[in-house]
Length: 180
Image (cartoon, rainbow, N blue to C red; front, top):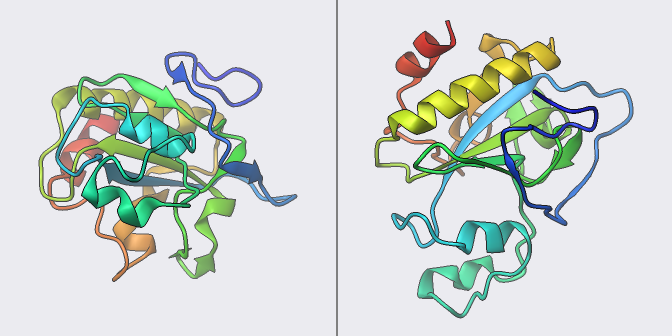
């Protein structure tokens, strides 16, 4: 379901300016699960899209003040109803992980795909989100053979002490059951 330039055909395409080329010779081998909601705990708005496209009015909500000047993106966002929005082609480097390391290899953005689930660190995710995430993950594993079940992790695991997402509300056991 991916086209030749790394776009997921089932996703709504929204172009983020916050990406660049992956380093030469680097293959995609990691999937990082994140969560996001803007403002925190509020769902369905345009603020995530605005953040990832550089159009967020950081004065529109008190909690957005720290986001001023932030250049961040993910490859995809999975909304509460399971809809997928793609901001960066999978063959490009999205800016989702920040300072990070997986199994001793730093700079996870270089070799990973970042998927955001609309939610918070404390809330549970919807069945529709798990279904969409599972379908997308299966496709990514098919298209990127180095991406295996053992190379799927949370943002909290690659940036411990700095990040806590996808949080305690993400049911890893359930997700891996769905993948099997």
